[in-house]
Image (cartoon, rainbow, N blue to C red; front, side, top):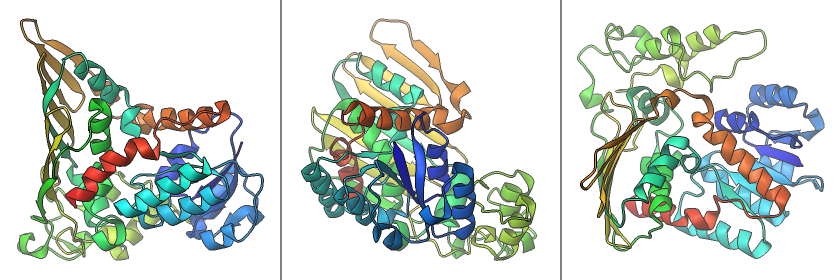
Length: 389
């Protein structure tokens, strides 16, 4: 199969590392010249099949393309995916699918009318830890309540939602859609439920703004006398720990160390978290009744030092507690059941979930069947996020 890739950022590169045998990258579309050139060299894509803009790519006929990975900025997902559907190309689409429900439905309608598969990258459905939670929950009888907390963690929050490309709603949409669309999808996939009442949501930007800056904080971490002890220090995150640097493009003849120093001195990722232009929430609470009488409470937490997901599922047959890799099930009249998945915490590719979703997508296409993470199956989870705002 011949594959086109539109958007060659960090997520796309993860998926490309998982391509099964028999799938080759034939075309690349990426506006960043360094990224385009390096990705093309790695996968043997000829220069005449490389494009800086989607418009130039779609202006030409490419009859050999079978499928497309779309990992462009969120706001471009629908127009790009619809253009692919219109040409008869199956699509593996990064989440969230669309910035609004109307756009989601337009893509769903177009794909169904064309008979083209559009599959979403919802890796929680493939993660062994979350699959096990689903299996155990389904043995507990009717579910009555679910409490789910997404602890974003200080590094991810600072890098992605304060300094980074998902820091402003007008550029990337609300944080709940960006960060929790796969949490909402997992819960609705796990329960098989739908929304059965209004979504109630409260949220705010409580911490990452100038009023919360410590006295004496500089506008850039590299100039700040407080950065040695600040948990959001860009100097510590990028220079000392060398974490969250996978998205930094390194020009030929340069080095990661040089790129980091340039970023600290003049780039967006060197800014103090209290002096950025971010406006997305850092805390949000969402409540909704699901079909089957399930009360769901879903909370996004971006200001604490905790990182990871915790979930409590209360059912007629017992209660399941899952917290950052550990599962405990208490059934009525039985000894507690405990399982430990913490060894997967740092396993690459989301503990193999990324590889599993990519392989499932292509194996489905090769077998002539529909991939499992369809737009239709993901609609209700996205709808929850749209209504949460």
